Amino acid sequence: MADQKPSESRHYRFEQIRARELARGASDDEATRIATETVDKVIPAEEDSK
Image (tube, rainbow, N blue to C red; front, side, top):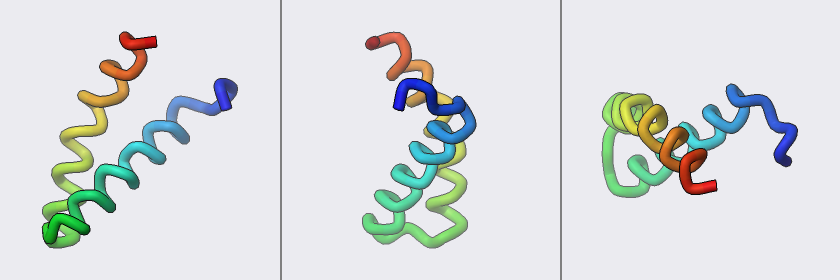
């Protein structure tokens, strides 16, 4: 899995965040907006921790 393209892992994380927001009760638009804002913060934080 380390050979995964950055866009694939970004999309995967985006979908995880979006699903979590939908489960929390957010609307589809709100979940997408939150996931978009959050994914760019999460990816660099994960890379720094490796």
